[in-house]
Amino acid sequence: MWSRFGSNALANVLTGGSTVVFQLGLTWLATRSFDAATFSVWSLALSMAGLVPLFTINLSSVVTRQLVPAIAAGRQRQIGLVITAAHRLGIGLALIAILIIMGAAAGLHRVSPALASTGTGTFLMAVLLLTIGQLWQITIQPTMAWHYAREDNWPGVVALLLIRMIALGAMWFATRALTGDLLATALCLTAGYWTGMGVAYSRTFKPKLDPTATFEGLKQQIIETTRLLRWFAIWSVGMAAIQYGLPQVMSVLGAAHYNAFYLAYSLNLVVSGIAAAIGSAMLAPVTRFVASGNRSATQQALLHLPIAIAIILVGMLFAIQWSMPFLVTHWSHGIASAPDVNAYLFLLGLQTIARSLPIAFAMVMASRTTGLRLVAPSLLELAVLLLAAIPLGYFFGERVFLLALTGAGIAAALATAATGLRAADLEKSDRRRVFLRFVATEICALTVWWSLAG
Image (tube, rainbow, N blue to C red; front, side, top):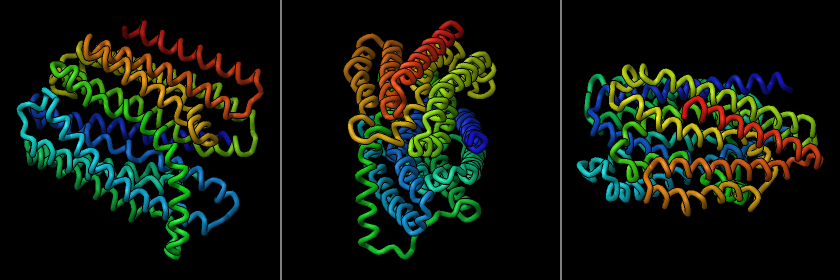
């Protein structure tokens, strides 16, 4: 059991490693190609396109949850029907993503000081091209779920490596041949994404569809998946909106230091991506533990995974902060100062630690709960964001906003742990022990990062 989990965890860590290389490489190439003003426009357009993962609305988790019992029972026709229905839903989600992101981009252009000198058409076209490039993250979800449900994450690793490697190569070509051209660079990056997607699907990552599915059968499966998906949608959007929406908010609250914030945000996104990659390896095993009533394995995962994630996060954040002078000089080509980037990284690191430690509890929720219990922690965090963090940031500045966001993350983490434990079907004494261990881990991790970086 644990050897299989270790293999999948390693696969997901390698996926996270590819995210590190891709994110750092993309920023490095952009800072080489664009001046400071154009880089601000590029990073904002890229962050708008980066909202695409919100529209995956945890589709892979829902499909994984549906596939695990079907695979266990050997219902091959049901497996194909579930994946086919999920692909149809993915196409609809992609269209919705384009419409909403373009509307939000038009609104951001009107209010962001960082875009004051950029034409509306230029910014919107850059956002459109980059958004189309990111839609692969939605269309790949059903096939990823098929591999997750079989607890074989390696095909997904190969696919993601191919997509990112080819996209990064396209970005390199654009910065060499089309230096400073915002729209041409966006077009090249988009072409790279979809070329990589085509290669991945043709070589290593074939989806398992049911070509014989009847209209009525497919319609019924889409309805069933949508019913389960609606709660996961609120949950995942609530969790991801804060992470992926920060650049847009900061372009309004902290436009004067936006480039420094974006560099810190890019580095922090790498760290949180590693934690998410580890967590994604947990969904199928946790679903199996809970479904089979294996309380011991569930308890061990909830006891030890937060500690492991805390060590990884704090270690990575400290290493990045320590190497910041080198990174600013050689990676971002001096587009912002090291002290400014480190100041933002400290604040973002607090939020990342607070929000990432309860990943194992979130996986228990994803495997067992629906309805209000599933979405309550996300709604709590969004409420604190809207009612406290943004108003405080508007009146007292972006740093107060980010500190308030950390408070929202802590509240959501405690709520996630409590909700996950209620769904885990553990003894009362075991629930108490696990929750106290989690609280102690959260306090220790935040204290260590505060003392090292504050």
